[in-house]
Amino acid sequence: MYKECAYSVCYFYDRKFFYSKYVYFPKYETEYIIYLLCGLLNNSNNKNNNQVIYDLCAGTGILGITAKILYYKYLVYCVDINKYAHQCVATNANLHRVSIINVLTDIFNTRMVFTDIVLCNPPYIESSKIGNVHNLIYKSLDGGNLGIEFTVNLLQKVCNKVKYMILELGSYEQYLILLNKVKNSFKSIAYIKPYNNAKVCFCVLENTCI
Image (tube, rainbow, N blue to C red; front, side, top):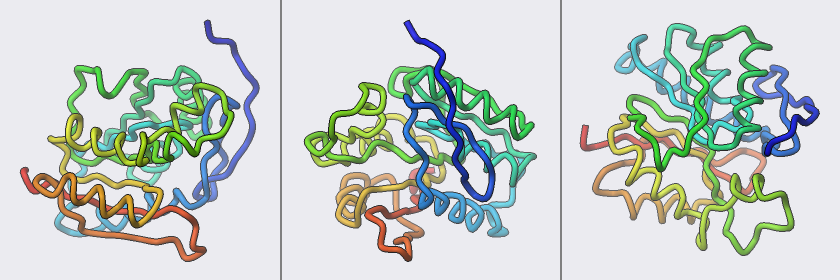
């Protein structure tokens, strides 16, 4: 049984968002996913307003909602398994007066078919390195033994029909492992390491099978 909980305020891409204690706090560095999205969509070869953008593991919905604000003609889905995240997305979409499709589901057990562009800040912390946190927060952080298993499964089992994946990862080493695991289906077309040397990195992967 879920209970309502109070919201706290954070800022992302110079905009106000709400989050709750059962939804992971958005990091400043995650804005790089939006920078990469803008670079991708501002490329003349990718200017197609009929494309769909999916924010998987949406959490507060900062990625999907920001994408909708910037590219209002695009259809945007925010997808998460956490009911509190689902509530945060609804609250934040209402705050910014944007129309997105807010879906509460398990992405590994859904009839949804993901296409076009996926934005994702997936769980990428090694299971053994996660501290004592609430179970819902633990699930949002747990990337498996190496921290990369969740993302590999995402690309191989869920996103095989997606044209572009824009991802946050925990390290350059995870990036290399991921590329090796999915090399028969995806290639890297962009990579960013934050200027402040944060322990994260970002990449754009293109599906070579489409």
